[in-house]
Length: 243
Image (tube, rainbow, N blue to C red; front, top):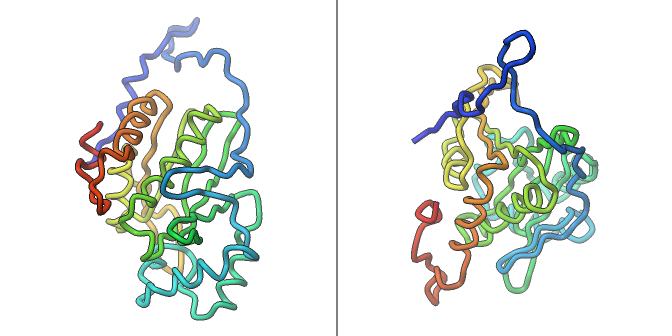
């Protein structure tokens, strides 16, 4: 079920004119950007994307999506050749915003997915996650969930941001289900927000705020605990059940 944010939950104060205003954010200071930290988990690690190190493994993983469906809702792709994928990566993935990451998993460990931090506003503590390329090797795996957890933990626990956003095409049902499963709250639809590949995009907005993070952090850690999985890696309890 979609959940909308109720702004009335942030009890308003009154200014000297008797007008309602937002609560004071005491002791706030500008946060750091995510930087080049390697985020280590039990099932994966999330590290700065480097074409020299990750291109060939990512191409091998992405190429398993023979229909190109994993790029339907992205503004680029699918890519027909390694050369075109390299060109995209070198022209798009080496800047500061978006800040692209490779998701490395498996044995032997190899890059099997892409994610990014983007649109950072460290002065007010807001940042977004996006540009998710989950190859067939990564989809529906424990590593896929852990990668998202590691990025959330970096934002909230390590850097102290106030808000973490997830946005997608309102027609992208898998992305919307993923946002809900991961604990993001649905906030509404921005109609005709943008266009990509010559198509209109109504954008669905989701977010987690810092007051929600402690409970989500506990749920992720409980779900990821090795006792929650059978010997063949099957989960005993769903992530949502821990919230």
